[in-house]
Picture (tube, helix red, strand yellow):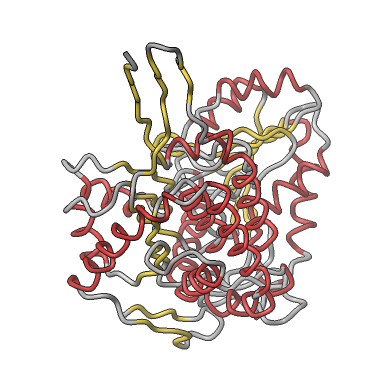
Length: 456
């Protein structure tokens, strides 16, 4: 049984029975059977049905927003995820024809030589709870458009999301066997992967979860797309607009209670701007309201689970015990406790502290002063993770030069915590491997197939 324990009050908000091993295998078999007919539809028809499914999700938004608050704690004032959900799916629909177009090498009287992109078959998409709609659609939309069948296994914290998406896409004409929302336990999932049930598996989650996926797929040659942990840095250069940098970087660190895949978890500031930056950061965070996410006045809701909040508390306490300075007074956040975690800004931090090395995934950020670009680059690269980095400067050439030296998947200049669907979403080191969205996303979700046809 999968249970969603609401972070609002610790009650059971939803529970669903997992599929037995036989039922799970039958679901895979149904998907394989249905996939061929789905792939045979004209591309424009698949695009139209996916776009209609996306619109159907949008029509549910008034119900989805409070559901998300109950399931994972995001305040209702932020209105859900449909903006990003729609942006990503729409862009992938717009580029599909070009991205999936055959590469014509020759079409003469003697030969037709062409490389086509063909679907993998059945895809397993394992989606996380922190941005449950946007992370799922990153793969679901282009996978379906490319002609794959999709089995969506959503996080136990957000079980209603997969049901909503399945309802929306089925109503749009995507066959039920082609897009299935499934509830699977870990062992059944691993067993399916180990028996080569899927042509490709896309997983977003923890490093430990990614290792389990790799272990299950070992020897099967099943393709894996993995987006795992992060410890994304921000760097404020000596020519940066300090207030603008603070507003964006602190929002990137604290929004969604710090539970963002590409959230900012550590900040390096040119030493001449350090005091001003910290003062602005403290001012911003001190104005937050921690509370029930169903309250329109709440700006910071609970973390998804109390144990997540406890881990951040432990990292913060260890850092303070080792000499870090905490800048946010507990009296500003009287509701702190359990899943409800007050935000914190730390200085006097070092890379010997867990809060600057391990993923926190909560509303805490450490800030360090640096003397120059070289020191900032070295510190940004001193991490096991590599998803995004944010560089703040008025010099594009300088930003690109710094970006060339950072070990990460995406580098932002003067912005942070944003996923551009036209660019490949990827990472390195313990953040994982693979590429989502953009043209490269279609290449990930299909395989090349060469045709060498002799006419005479």
